[in-house]
Length: 331
Image (tube, rainbow, N blue to C red; front, side, top):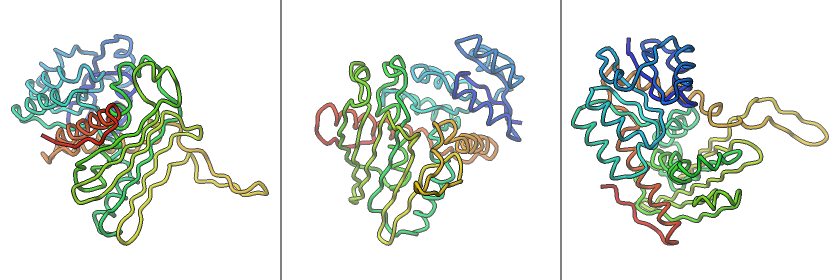
């Protein structure tokens, strides 16, 4: 049995707890949170004890930690866990600073512990199928990728102020997905962005509407569209155009039922937000992590994937700030 401790008992910690509670071969062995009430509530649901981070790291019978705490705490927790020989499941982003991410990867490598970065969208069944069909050559060589990712409404301003900005907080998922589908690293990024949804977001120094173009060395192109507002629900679509055809992953709806009458055709709304839309992906990524610990296979996405996504997010922000394309250098 793999014993896993949850660091962070908020929304994402609860998601990972549900995944582990329904899984064979692994269990929630302990929970920790800076807010005692949150830790106690999740402990009651899981049957696991509340422990301090220090005690979790010192516990010989705890094999791994899930880091679902605020991003500003990841750096120290990764260093502590790696030195304690705990396998690490880390929510994105690893850190908001690429150089600090390098430090994290160095301590992970030095201590030879498994390190998984939670880009859960890679585990969405629809996106996995799309990528598998690309790899199988169903549309020949990829030429263009279009990724649309739009939230139903913006998060609270207090969250915006500490999130690292749209590119590092929201678009980082799409930047990782671009690499996943293009099959090669982009070499250039160009950004157009604005604040069109809520002036308070602009006042906080962020944007809420953005389009980013990526180009690879071979000339493949990718366009990413992000918005903090979609009046019709949680918008998650991908289109990949290739030499011999096109692949498309549409929105996941709350029902497959469609009504037809004199007013036309009407389908169900999209899933309301990421917890519902990516429920299967959250379970699948945790199953992968447990498989990594059981079999010794490499974690995927890895720390390097997390680093490259952060470099791309930083460059997207720099392109917005400067109004010029930015070269992507992953070193």
